[in-house]
Image 1: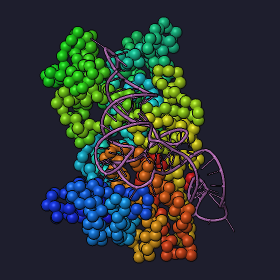
Image 2: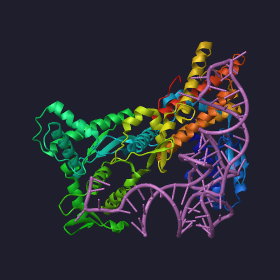
Image 3: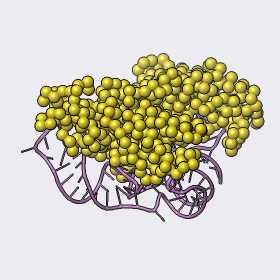
Image 4: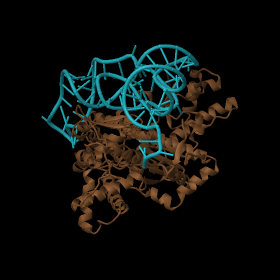
Length: 553
RNA sequence: GCGCCAGUAGCUCAGCCGGAUAGAGCAGCUGACUUCUAAUCAGCAGGCCGCAGGUUCAAGUCCUGCCUGGCGUGCCA
């Protein structure tokens, strides 16, 4: 196998060896920066600044180190030659043998190409969305939903056994509020006196739930307390939320409710543990967390003077429960507006003496909406509420998913509704899908012309070394490394960046080089296989993004 | 006030563990459909990388201070 990983490993091993012999020092492979895909193909197939990085330790000028490295690398059959550029960059040109092996690998592994077993045997939990069932999901939830789902998909692709989890608050004042709101609407339907709660939920979906109760139960529920309405409404809303997520191709493996943490005694035992660690104290009849010990600017209340826990308390209990379940990596996707909440949970876990290094918070930055020049608002408390469902129906699941992972979640973004809807060259989703469609079209044409080829055949592979073909092939070779990098760094946008670059290279190739050419049967076959490989990688990548890969556009 | 995140081309954004001449898409301007799909391609133009110091052989990237913007900062959730 000549995956990008084994190429890297072999070559880094050569570097480590050369360093070890003269110095007596211990150089491991990890001491060197991994080889990167150069921006320009003139800079080789892999580039490295290893010489500059190690020059100091070796006490030799970078250029001299580079020459030693070059000689070592050139002993490998994987390497054709190495060029030293600038202050000591190593630009590695792989041998033609490797090029063919790469193509062979893609066309043999097919859907498995890009997937790896690097993290096999490890378990990961990705918690995301976690919206409370007090209303339908709105556009503000989409970024977290898509980022979380794609991160989960990426981690699964590199070997993790991944569990997607949804945590929701179904206890506390807001749920009471929900029940009272529905109850009021229900009574209203029967012309009975009702008092709508002051900060009740005003959305039309509350009325719809009330109407549903009437359809299902008639007037038989007029004597029920708010608890019954809360339970009914929460169940309806969770179902609605699941359906909306399904429309975005997202499903969860587990749901954890706040109520269940009370029922199982998890909340209580967490408070006891905190007390035992002297992480809490009582003041003014309330229980306080000593978060200032961890750098918080004030201590925080965990149990109010009326005996009710605050929202952080079950959250701490939930994360304590998470840590106990034996995951190697716990990813938590939440809106950046909750960052101080995340901090406090972490403070509490640390005060409990728990190891929190497996816990990763992905704080997605806020999204603003615009349509052309008009700024759109989607605040939940105000009038105009745009639901997730409306966006998916209006701009499609493909485009919605893509737009929200295209950019780093660490940056605030503006979602242009009009651009998203445009079915033109403006829209990067179609740019990628078009690669797949074009490649399929070539395959169809090949059948028509009676051209066929398989990787095992004895063909003239020399065209693979031509600049354009080579550039494409090298980019395809880096694909598994991109997946691994995106998964390890929990940054899905690295994949979309790569794909847009790959797509650009392919479209340019398509324009410049006719693949199926009757006057050049020797070149047509290997080119045809190269295009098949591009199609395969695009299909695999779009699969991870859960964006469809159409055969025709 | 304090905390978190950001500030890169007209707009939306990439930029890897500090490395080569700072990139892409859109918008603007020139060109290319008798061909495997022009939802494409080739090219032009567009930058005190917020400001000022510092560290380094090397800074958009790291450190400090400041400016600007977003979001937090409840015995609300």
